[in-house]
Image 1 (cartoon, rainbow, N blue to C red):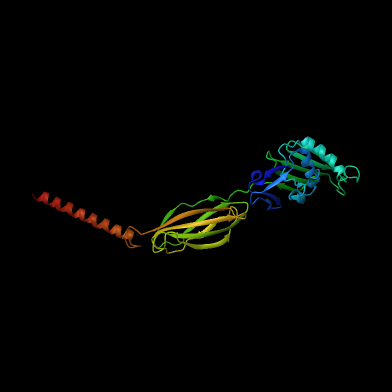
Image 2 (cartoon, rainbow, N blue to C red):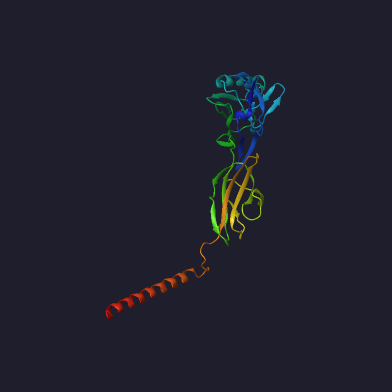
Length: 305
């Protein structure tokens, strides 16, 4: 038996798809150590000579028994798939009485990275169409793909995907607004196969608040993969710097965050709102008239002399 660290074999979770849904079927939340067969013959025995592949339910489960682990999720990296197929074809008859005794006809064939199981019409009970089952592994001995085809129809397939930390697809920049602003929004877009909740906090560096005081602006709220999160900034904040922080977590409690600084500044111009342009026009007009008058006076003096 060869002890293997699951966290090293598969970082995150493996998923199987059912229609448009994705479900975690093997979640390595904590480092664990399990033992699987370290050679071809032992893996054939632990996989029930390939019989585990005849049911998707058996494929996505692991049985920790006294003498070892029965699973198709992990395989020895040294497995010889040709020898494995030979072992399983023999074991299907001796252990399960298939391929002869009960009239079943189930044949395993090797692949370069796994195996296939085939049953002709009526070769697996009452099947009216041939059955093709495919199982593939990566170089680390982790299940990557499983499919169950009934005739020309794909009844189910299992595709392993590695769950990564949530990642930001759209991150806003720091920005400045004038005092008296309204309708300001901050938007984020985040990617994750297993999104869960987010919260938005506000930290203030102006006024009387302590520097490290945070105020909850949005409590725990569900977020969705690739769907924009829109935060409406409260109107009328006093001049100062405000840090808005979004904390996100997925279903495995992985967390990420982003911070945006919004600066509320004073208007530098003393002009009265609504009169800025007319006032500028008036000043320009008065200055122009003054220049014309001075030029006329100068010209009059020259002619008189």
